[in-house]
Image (cartoon, rainbow, N blue to C red; front, top):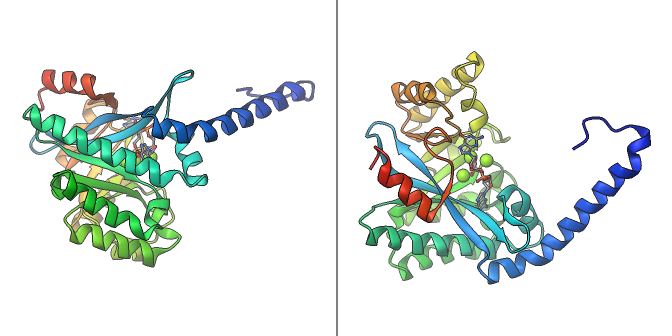
Length: 279
Ligand code: C2E
Ligand code: MG
Ligand code: MG
Ligand code: MG
């Protein structure tokens, strides 16, 4: 919080660090309870099909509705879940909730494909992809309605195992997407080997696209590269109309960002969709 830390202030500064680590410790213990007691909640952000101007896809983004602290963003507790072996339980909760949401939308006559985020920890677990495939079958959710978003880094630590798992998922009909593309350390050689369908350009290249010529070149080249490799492209972090139009003109398949909508809880999302021009 302090822009500058004077020597005089060091005690206050230390106290803050201490407070943060106590808070972190409490969150670790509370997270297990949170997953068990349904304190997690999914927010939904639309992914607009740019050619059709229709919402056919959403990304599910988890939040923790903490009884005392209110809504906690994922960047605060996902890293904790990863370090404390809770990622399996968390991702299973997310997918189970997404499947239930799929059916709630079906009942409203809304045909929606849902994307969920998968962590590196999940790809290290041999059981995980079998669980996903069985869960979809058991809950009568078509595999084509589910996209898994994976960051490049999730593949880097053990590429062989990751590729094996991704291949199994994809052979079973799930859509796979590389998230935050451009921010990781994977090489083009690795990217070429990945059995994926879609590439999401990281928001850091999209947010200030209009003011930044380097970003324009990166996005344009990425679109070309992806299309030549047979991949569809999603641009995340669209914050204005002109950027949306620019991407539409370049045949980017899908767009996502605050300009369209922030991630919203179920009811607000449904209201937004009803009054939007994209149904
Ligand atoms: P992500 O998967 O790359 O999701 C996109 C993030 O960018 C979301 O943040 C979204 O709210 C934000 N965003 C979307 N459009 C814009 C925009 O126009 N401007 C700006 N400034 N931001 C935008 P969120 O919901 O806080 O999630 C952060 C990250 O937490 C996600 O990044 C993802 O890596 C992780 N995460 C969220 N939910 C889950 C989950 O269920 N499981 C796992 N493993 N990770 C998750
Ligand atoms: Mg994502
Ligand atoms: Mg992303
Ligand atoms: Mg991200």
